[in-house]
Image 1 (cartoon, one colour):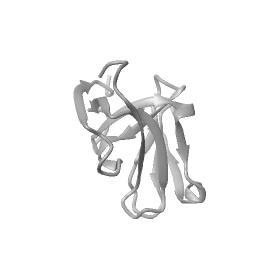
Image 2 (tube, helix red, strand yellow):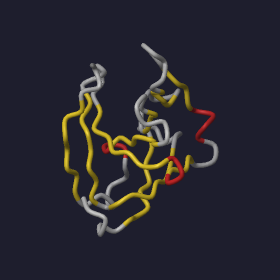
Image 3 (cartoon, rainbow, N blue to C red):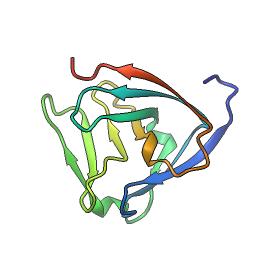
Image 4 (tube, helix red, strand yellow):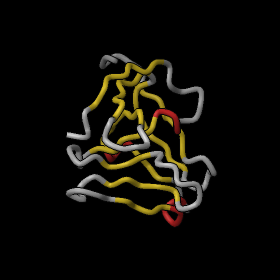
Length: 118
């Protein structure tokens, strides 16, 4: 991923479709695969102001925290999917699950392991 990668609008959300969002990010993303939870997630981050939850989605959200309570694992109340969340180390950013982005806007994913369990 470089600064010359085109920025596109990605749409995505949870499995049941109750939670939907849009995000501005490059078409080619640098993602991390986290070992911090049993669920495992491949994610990429972007500034909070580049993320927009679609109207009506917030009523279907619930938040799970553990440990320090800083990380906010945001889940759909209906299907249980975490399509985005707040990392404990990056409060100014939102992390999006690569698998929850609608097909067609991501052209490449460069994945790097992320040690979230330490």
